[in-house]
Amino acid sequence: MASIIAVSGSEEGTYYYLYAFVKTINDYRNAGSVLLGDRIVVQAVKISGKKIGIQYLSHGPDDEKNSPSQKTISIFAIYNGKLKKIK
Image (cartoon, rainbow, N blue to C red; front, side, top):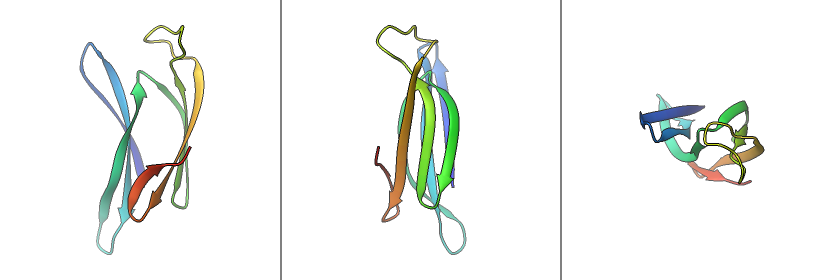
């Protein structure tokens, strides 16, 4: 199971995090989290087995803070109960 959380505590930005969880016998346990970026635009999330793929727009060198345009695909996996970025 995975969740994307947006955190905004000030005017400085909105930070997006990926949280992943693994199922235990009775509940779910946090497998870790990773910062995806500030003011990104999440377009798609796909979970297949223990892999999580996220497609989003991030900021290119000439982009305004609120206008990301660079297509980014990140792949994560859960290995030994921990979230790891693999691409």
